[in-house]
Length: 131
Image 1 (cartoon, rainbow, N blue to C red):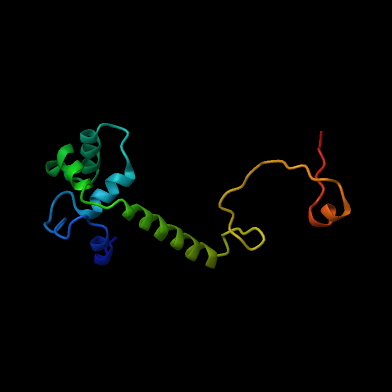
Image 2: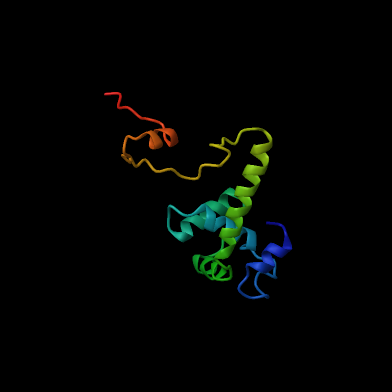
């Protein structure tokens, strides 16, 4: 997210995140993505302790105000980047598994009974119960 264009595209106001603060654009995105299992202030305390910035922990109110400066579409954009990188990097290694040349994004376990005719047997395989 060091690309300045990314920052410009997903800010509510052009003047947002201009000054150097404890809650930078990148940190606010990280905090949102990380989620919180605790109250906001406890979550902030934990993150800033891990960053070894105990004396610059922002308040929960400051964090809420900083979140309002982001457009929600940033997370759609980040998800798209992650997916593109995953398939670009792992496809070159042959680690992406394909089914009939396609990535499987989901599947349905529904059973469908078709009439037992020559034409349906030519199109579909016959499944038998193993019971």
